[in-house]
Length: 202
Image (cartoon, rainbow, N blue to C red):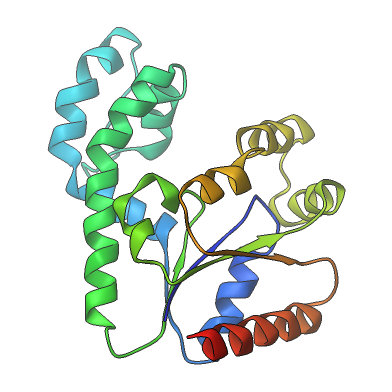
């Protein structure tokens, strides 16, 4: 079984991935993979964005000579076209690395923990999308406690993700929504129920 665990900010997808890992799934966090993909695509990123970085007096490299992701973010998040340009460079490498992870764990149930997997071809290989969700107010309170972010930053992230469930539905994926509104133990019971149903159908 190959699952994508996804959901909006502070809904509980990391907790769900941890629960599945304890049940024997091999898990990979797409954010970690994205960092590796950016390192691998270093030369292409420099070629694409160095001139803009120079104009804005932004250093694209950190002290170790790697791409400074925050600096890159300052450039690309100012323009949708620049976001698309970055994604065209980085996302194919993310897809390749995730494909590699699946191949390396071909004898094991696998979880891809990812917010925007619908943007890469690998989405078509998922047996199911486990969409972890929670009410906005609960997610806001969790994010404040967990990350200590300013309210405006949290709300901006929420706005960016407001159509996330619809985007996964448009990907024609087999998607199951699980509401995480209680304890971790309650979430685990819901995941157990999901797995039992999925394996019966499989």
